[in-house]
Length: 354
Ligand code: NAD
Ligand code: DAU
Image (tube, rainbow, N blue to C red; front, top):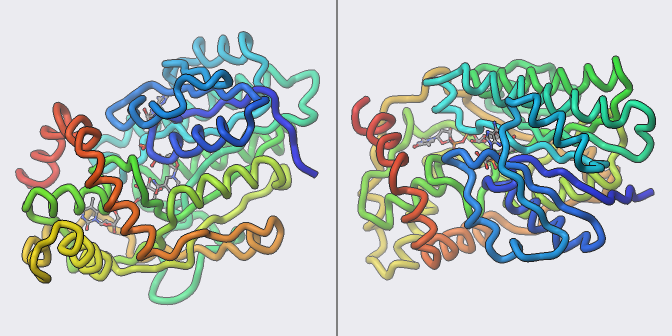
């Protein structure tokens, strides 16, 4: 049976994945009120949503989930029947520099939202849902073989993944202790449009375009399982409407790439798109100091989601990567906007001074 929500609160909707989820929900559910709550940190950008910002079923609220007075008032004011929680500090490198900020937003922020939902739904939680968007990084690091399943024991190894693992545990604890209707999904690495250029793929596209070094950590041997962001959004849509309360679903693309092989493919695509002789962009590849505690390999087994709910990813990786490159090349203004100001300071500290 499909759930029918009237007012859906999406947190972190001005970020990379959140903006794709907000757009999808606005378009797919014109009869529902879609509220996007976002603090607009460096990673949140309302330009990500200009195409849907005037839709009658859309409201944007600026706010901080660390502020419990704000989150409590939010649930009192709006008759929220579903929360799709994406707001988070999301970059592993930043978590290594500033773990506390990650604990505050990812753990305390999640608890504040859980408390708001618990109070609002105390008398009747029927048909309500708290959907927590999490990551495969909570499962730790794989060797050369094997996959993360929903039964894999948590083993977070970075401050970011530790904060996400902690938030996952709180979400399940609220289900078991207070009967809060919750679902969690744990997804692999996303790529696509509107991805902030501190992450590998958009950073490499940006640097190749500007003839700057492409930094590859260590030997580039680490493996990630890449999923097109719209396929993550489609999975969130499906799971929030048809998934089983109290369950966890793994989402992934069965699409593993060593970082160095991915960068070679990206260089090939960029040479073609920019009309440069083949091999030009490869010369920009620069091996730099490895990330501290760098997880070797992530790989998701999404059999449960595919078998129980019939989800399948829509795009092959090369096609998705070409689409992504096309978007960045056509949206120079977006890229220039997000890489001005604080980004320069971040880049200098992360790559030039170390
Ligand atoms: P992002 O960094 O692009 O966006 C995060 C958003 O949250 C931003 O709009 C930011 O302004 C907002 N935010 C941050 N702190 C806030 C606060 N205190 N209050 C309110 N809003 C706040 O992140 P993303 O890559 O889109 O990831 C979204 C979610 O998906 C995160 O929970 C992340 O852990 C999870 N996830 C990401 C990936 C990935 O590959 N990017 C994969 C799996 C899961
Ligand atoms: O697995 C899901 C996770 O994927 C999400 O939960 C995180 O929010 C998201 O940021 C992402 O984490 P990663 O650390 O895997 O993504 P990132 O793009 O930072 O790095 C991908 C790989 O590329 C990783 O092995 C580190 C490496 N890397 C990264 C950067 C930024 C480089 O070699 N050079 C770089 O400059």
